[in-house]
Length: 316
Image (tube, rainbow, N blue to C red; front, side, top):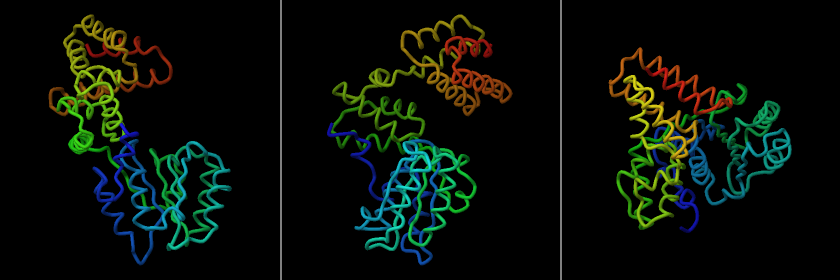
């Protein structure tokens, strides 16, 4: 397979970034601008292209000298104040080589402690003329206000299913792997807008057979089939609690689906029903509240099967 497909097919240019044109078009205006490039903050869920966009922007903005003028750090690995004092400060104090400025890319910066963020803010102030900071995070609310105010914030959205399908088919065709269209659609369903997850599922499925089949997807991801989840919900909504409970048992015990994964699939099914206007708004609101409470209890350590049975009882 020649290594991870996520890296092999990672876009190298801003124009090749999938599904984030509203971000890449704005970023291109900064390159070569007389006003220079501001500090940037990329925020959004995992697998939507934040790191890929940052790397493509660095190569475009700095050109052939990007390796000498670029520092990439994962703040979740080194989240204390030491990373700022040692790595970032040591890099920033040196002059750029063959480029107008240097770039520091900090991934998962929302994992940094408040003290480390405060130290980072001081470094951003001190080297404002020679260093551009690109910060990436899942939750911008976890970043202190002084840092947010010093950055142009770009919000990355989950990638649309149609864009993921097009990319997955391109990768499969490039690798000479046959696939069922239904299998690609299943991957998109489980990826939930996460391109990295989608590509990893595609590669894992391709490694266990000559063809990417719909049935193979479930062997790889250990999640419930959407039709089983839908059948379980229909039985619960129609008043057949014991029937829905039996399907729940099969999904969790026979198929090995975790409680956290299943609650997400239940949410997806309920949301789709509401969007298709198959459910009254007041019923949807009550169900979403019940799903949210169940999700919280499962994540706090409660028995997943008991909590999910209780949830199905609320569907009656």
